[in-house]
Length: 192
Image (cartoon, rainbow, N blue to C red; front, top):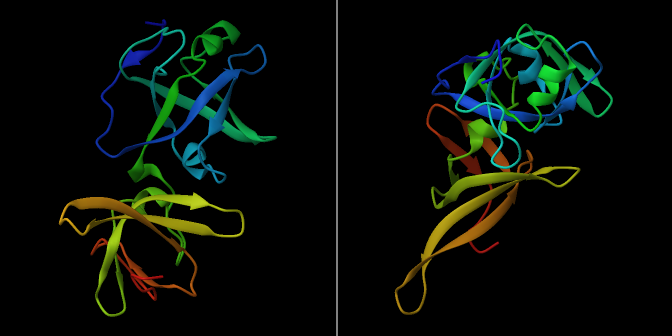
């Protein structure tokens, strides 16, 4: 265990938002590679939970808590400093660590804006009430985001197999998102 890092319990609503890439400068700052092009969760939370990467050197185990002093944009990444990281050596020891933030500390999304993590697992139905599948993931294709749905279908022998369906997440096809009902309604047909 690195000095100054305290073991912590990962919150039940923790979301992985990035990883520590390397030390940045000599005063304990470190470079973060966010998983999102809009890393507001890293800026809004002052409590980051770290877990060691699956591969590479493990300088700590379990989950530890960092109390963030400052996090800011820098070029194509984010740089941050924490009370528990006094110098470059301590920052280097965190290289590869996975960063988790409590979902409850994310900034509030604007009207008709959604965090991808909130859409994963939602049921997708069309206007006629036909269930098209469940959101497994989202893909950014540049100009738009695409919902990747998973659904089951029986083949000629009656054996059920899991298939994939993609629907652009744009207002032309998405009628509404009801997070409380865990449902997305779309203008889409099963045979598209």
